[in-house]
Length: 154
Image (cartoon, rainbow, N blue to C red; front, side, top):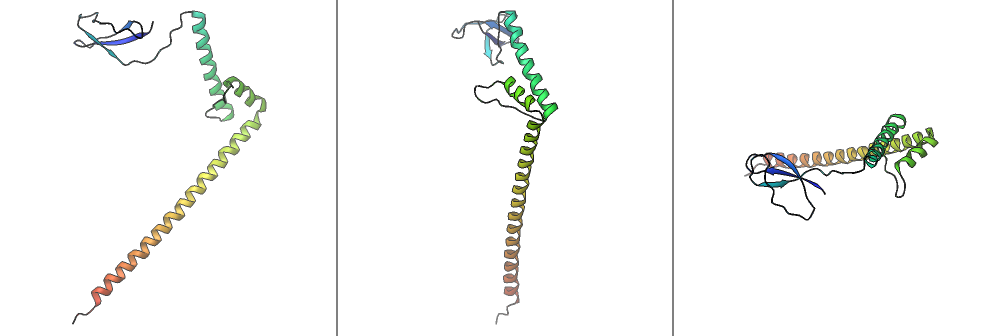
């Protein structure tokens, strides 16, 4: 049965209640006895068998260790395994290839840095062209204003 968080309407006491997902029980505050309303809460996983619980925790801990090792040793910030592939398989593949994987990741990072730099350069060129066009337009307007001010009206 899932746990739900409830908050008392009068005294703001927060407490948990076990009931079915489809049940809509009338819940009263254990502290003051007034009505309570359901509040949003974080999702939790409850595993009854302690062996299963430790198995889940060990799996999460191993994934965390793998991610830290990939970051520290190989400089890989994030890994997304392909469909049908586990994080452990990706990790073993990277470890077996060793420096080859690191060099490949470094090459990809350098390539993306070059592409970013080229894009910034292109943007700067376009910006300078726009500025030049604005400057020319302002000079034309100023020349037109100056010639209008210099005209002698008879």
